[in-house]
Length: 389
Image (tube, rainbow, N blue to C red; front, side, top):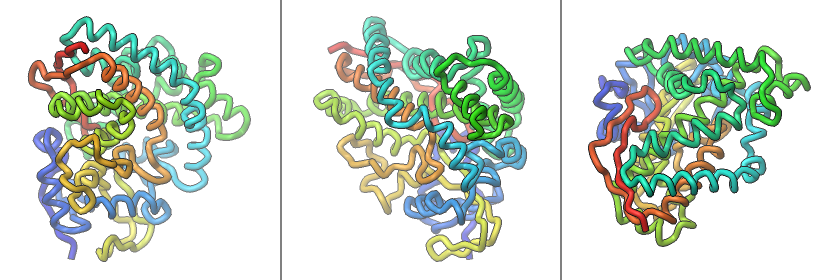
């Protein structure tokens, strides 16, 4: 028997604070049927990892969202493809996001971060979302991607709409439909244009010319860059500032040893996963920790819950930058791990390093406001005061 729950993880209240209800779901069993979404939730760390590392058994090609519309629209992206098709697309999209390619950008990213933080320290009172977390993703990264200047003012709305549309058919999903349509039109326009030489969009078009993917796949490939280059990075950075401002002793540790920035950011991703969940579909009758699932069962795989699972982490609700959090699942895991996570890390590490060098204390200067999104956990406003060193 699979236990069931009436909890709606996509209600406003639980998008604000999901952790107690997720703990209850973990305690109910390895798999819990969610009545509100007609889906099976997988919430324990080891079970989530098992699903993510078994793409043949739990596929993405039938969509990773919670409604039929987005699962059909998204077919053919790296997020919603499997096997050889997925690997072919990922090879093209991931080429400029490889560790070697990104290492060539590290000095530039650090220089931009240093200059930005120097300006923010002068200002002292800032909104850590609009003044810090959104700056590099909306100014520097669009140049790397090759986005036209016209339309850039809509990128944040389009990226947010992409993740909202992955949720169930609630008000947020329906409201995001128009933005999603605009974004798709934009991607087709970019694919039909001549993006700047050396940009990621130009790389996609060149790959199609070499026969590495079909010309018709170029718009989807361009869309694949949008969400990972914006929302996941912005969410991760905003969550980092909030966690450090709420835990000043942890900021002192990072200041004392900035070489811990990678470890610290992993702990940020564990505590506040930028993407809360995706779905998978069982390709056969399957078993998860002794629980038998029917063929074609759709599973909601919760990264947020897995990263707070008491079965894996000691004191999981404590933010501790000394913790070894390399196994966190904030960017997913396995074949479908976030293709843009290297770029997100590059920007986040650069900004946290710059802050550690120049800021003695980070203090909340007002009540933070969450940006409610079906799949992204982030802030809309985060007022803080920076005290220089």
